[in-house]
Image (cartoon, rainbow, N blue to C red; front, side, top):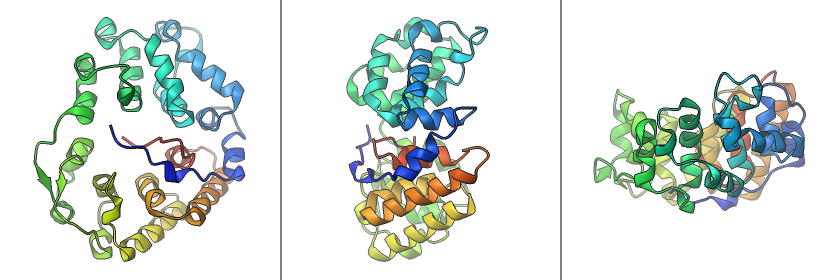
Length: 269
């Protein structure tokens, strides 16, 4: 399981306020992650075994959005999700039931380290791929940032969590390496962001700010930037996301940014 990044925990009051300003549609999941109690209660109730068992035909809309609720609870406090998962049937007991597949697939990376489920228990049906991303060794011993950057194919993205466990050839990642690279290559640096040199870190900050300002998906940039930046920079990112939420009609790609900035250990897949 990937290590938690506890350096991120700088969340402005403005961001938490913005996350709780609405409870309709996809906004409710931000409110859950920010700890707004009425939204948290609904999410926890919706993820109880008896609610998931109702399936997609249930008249109560509380059973919908299972994946979103799992991610929101994990962003609030992964221990709450672990407690829920301990009450769930194991995947083998509900194999082929789409709503349980959704719940376990979303939860797996957040609860795997707790021991609530073992690799062998997770290698069932539709969960097999997610389990392989978490536990299987990479298909290659070594991976090169520069070779992947130059590749015309982005096929590596499909198995990136697993590939990221391979040895990284480059001892240092420079600004030249980072410039014009696929941002998702940064996933290779989780747990080894110290390989970014000073110029690369400065460029990463610029790229993160630019993505937040433009409305592009900044999540992987932000996750990596938060791991290497100081308190002031992380607070600046937080304020930028809060400002964007204040005028947004829907949270869209900002949701993952919010989850990252809460600093509770939530990480992208």
